[in-house]
Length: 464
Length: 77
Image 1: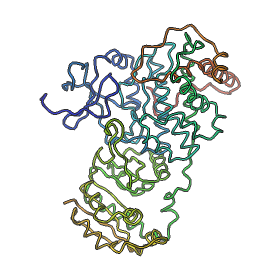
Image 2: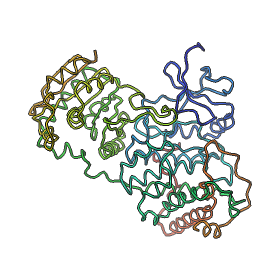
Image 3: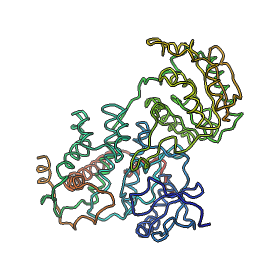
Image 4: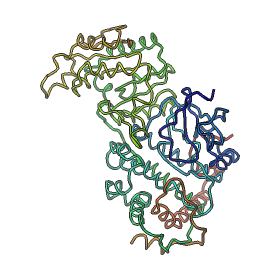
């Protein structure tokens, strides 16, 4: 049984306390002897129990599973398995904000139990059953009176700086997290933020002065003015409170995003009857195939994603528009939805592999594969808006999942006409026949239904 | 310059040396900034708790048991 192959998780190498590995598709975490005291403190202090019960920290079981590196091993634990790993640059504003607030809330509870977070990476937070949760059980160490927070800079880089930039400048600056693996450098954030952010005490301290301090003391000896100084616990609590207050006050209003009003205002091309019929068709397709999980690509605010997630099917609603994803997430929170995860994704440039050896954070399509893909009112944006030929689209969808629920929006549809209005129509081949013929190289067509009151059609395809 | 102003105006306590190193580089600037503003942060916490005590004197009815905790889902039973 010890011969079953193990694979160390590529993202798990920095912290000598332990590491993640998989065996038979199950994720385990090895705890090294170097972390034994801290782990026992986490358990014995009751902090683990308290955090796990409140669903703030991923629960785990200690297991007899053979370790992956026996000479260093203290224990192996099996954390509750997550359905999907998402990264902060795929989150909307409020998703990153809620992850930040979770981190601070955990730090406060840790301090109350005599422990502290030794790191505060946004990658340690995942969305699980609709809510953010800390997944790194080895993030805690005993708090020692007088010491500053070692994860302070990481928190500011991973959370406060991108949130402030998204709030004060442009929500798309979350993309900086994709560029900088350890969060947005604070000098860059300070340079990009408007000057008025200096009038906010917390942003002044934790971003602007923080950036200046990092620059000033980068290559210097400890100045004599701070030698022998310490940070008492009240000050540390004040630091966490200040960060929390700063994060809470950051707002972003998605307002009228590119797509958010798509269904509500565009009654011209989405007559009520057509919409009702499309909903009924999607529902009947879903009931016919009974998916294990669904990826809704181009999900907008998730109206159709909910046809799946409300059936208890784990569903991810991807959209390119951070505003639509934000509205979708806020709706998930309002309805306390457990089966729907909205994420930002540009299909024309999906999340790549980044970090060490390009393997630390995986490309989105390598993380898991869906059983069923929904692509409603999407194909024309890729085929015409982005000039992707139909056969390449078929290759892409063919490599994704077993089932594909896909809408074909023909050339005469007002939405396609709008895409073509200012450009040369080089898409003679964009017809339903050509679409079905291209996709038939990867799929069997199980059902093809016209959508009432429109020239559109909905197709249920099964991979060959 | 800001740091000189901050550091001269703050309480410095005799303290043990900084902890043996963390596995992540906490950044010397980030550690020093915290030490420099520690007095201010502690003062703000004190102010806030005094202020809420003063406010509670004028509040009618029983004082709500509310610590600075925020997770509504985190009901401890």
